[in-house]
Length: 294
Image (cartoon, rainbow, N blue to C red; front, side, top):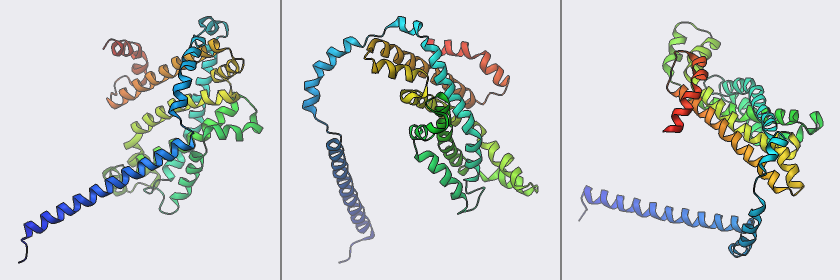
């Protein structure tokens, strides 16, 4: 006796569920195996950490910041150098990031030629800024300039890829409207595509700027100047109070950059046109105070 269509459907659902649970179980087992091998590779030992914990707690007593060192060494000036590295590197990287990001989009450059530009961005993105810094040492030595160049090259790949992804998601309506008017290819790209993603482009640029400021701190630890270099020198001298003072300044710098960037992105999302950038800058202190009181 043949089963009814409903029974057959129920059987298929049960089978699908069993297969799904088997796949879930295999995924969990694979995840556990990878985690276990990773812990072995990093020589993780809970017993060693437990034994070292009292020593770590005792060492924390030496990690009290020397607040006077901030003023004596003018650490906020050094943090300004770090901020300048991140800012200049971002600005220098934007033109090529925009160019390669646009040309890397399949909507602008046909396949497979667009992958030439994607490949250039991929190389820039695959090599960390830290390695780029080491590559450019013969050009500018251990200096903030080498760090700035490294940040700029890294920005080209990271920001360009984000630009490309945004362009792939634009709607076809404005593009088709431009084409029906007889617009050229460049006009279609500028007014039909870039006009749709200009807000996203600015938001992603601000995000990359935040990342680049953190990268600038790391490059300073290698001799790239700024607050990172001060921290590295004090750590080498085993002067941990001074080192912690530098870390406190880094925290202040990163938080300040993130707060400013977040407020600008929030302003852009609200799509306010009146007053433009001047209104944004003038009203920034008031908006920050209102946010702090919420």
